[in-house]
Image (cartoon, rainbow, N blue to C red):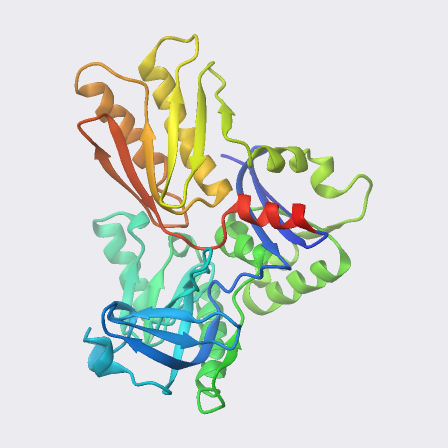
Length: 388
């Protein structure tokens, strides 16, 4: 079984959390003080204007950059999707959550379907019933899990994450109670002035604990303030993790000691060498990201592509690449080899916290993918630090 380690620190304007799987960097969470993430934040916003051509509304969040709320993410009576002009009016206060951070000149993307994530559960207070993550498979085991959850989660809406399958009833109940309290605090504030922030989104280390904390026997934190923050969060949301948090105050710094600083800096480059002799070239453009797979001197296209598929999934997560992605694999023979590579790629992205879809291979041999945008791309965050 793989060993998971979580390391967290503050370095200048950056608050960072790294997830290591058997010593290999597999996930990276970074916030920049100069460009704070709003992902997951809940606002009582005010509708600035309705744009009928986009079937969307611009919502003032009080942050200096308006958010975009499209009709599909607005809530009509009984949850029906209607034209935005029939749902909202200019000047109206509206409860919204940021589902994607601002990109370039575009403001954040909003939704009225507020959800509050925990390690095992996601609370959807405006919905009803219990849904189960697709990662938990199908069949009798899934049905039994739903029955077990329904006995614990009464009322409102819930989504069971993959970790719910191994959580104890006490853990599920405690997390559900904490999430209900968080929603109650939001609901009690909706009569206040707009625009205003009602609940901040989780910071980088907290996101790491939510996604990977249950599997991590060791959580090492550098910095007294950050340590206190994470301990407080664990005491309220994940008491079983509090005892796993250990401080680090040695020299060199935590990330430098684990050789993470150099590895993170390397993620800004375009070239990624593969252990078998091939390489990837990753180029970001405004419209999409292109990944070119080179065979090098190895010569076996299938072996290179299979290794590349796993590394591509890892690089997309570490670099926080979102949007349209096109992959040009090394040319293969027949039909079976491309199918094996597509299956390997789909399997490699299956556990990505950001929804990632592999659409298949075009007639030109290009694989088309999409990955949901969440926070700011790593290259953009690091370039901010370079400018300071």
